[in-house]
Amino acid sequence: MTRIASHRGGTLEFGDSTPRGFSATAQMPLEEVEFDVHPTIDGAIMVHHDATLEGTTDRSGAIATLTEAEVRSAVINYGAGGNPISLDELCAIHAESMVDFRCEIKPGADGRPYPDFVPRVVDLLTRHDMLERTTFSSFLVESLDAIAAATDRPMLWLVSPPVLRQVGPAAVIELCKSHEISEIGVHVDTADAALMAQVQDAGLDFGCWSAHTATQIEKVLTLGVKVFTTDRPTLAIAIRTRWREGATR
Ligand code: FE
Image (cartoon, rainbow, N blue to C red):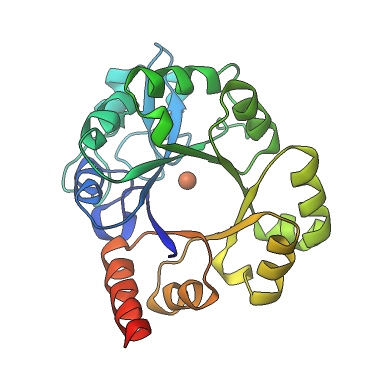
């Protein structure tokens, strides 16, 4: 069965990385909640997509230069008045949920990985008994190396369209082998059956990200990818349910 990951707690249904999106996702019949993490200047780990606040909230500034209280005071756009939450809070929201974590390690505003950040994320998840329910992801191979050094939990490389186009599938697969990466995710619009077969024939798992429209969701279900992220988890569940009913008739 193709797994569904509610991207940033279902951005197009609940706003970007909002408390209500994560709470709603925790109750949904899907498998994963995808989220991104950033450190604050005073040692907290916040759940937010961008490294800065201005793109998705009423405040500005880089999270890594702000205190936890300052980040919390931001109001998320289209988020029903919700404020950014910490990873501690997300763990609490999902403690009793069947929905597992898909934790993306983001770089800072300069595009570089945060120094010594991954072990702190792993420690926090361990303290909340969530590490064993977490898959990690990153666009940065450097961050995947840091994840592999800190934990043996599964991880996947998010391969962007420019990377896939410029280096090609064979080089992507080679890089995976040399960095012990066992899974990749590509943008849904760059996925097709030939690419999936090439990746799987190399012994790697294959998934997609950004399947937000009905057409994109139907595409990934038809391909039979391992997992996909979507900003519309409710829609994805409805389509997958219809899909399964059709398959069993
Ligand atoms: Fe992400």
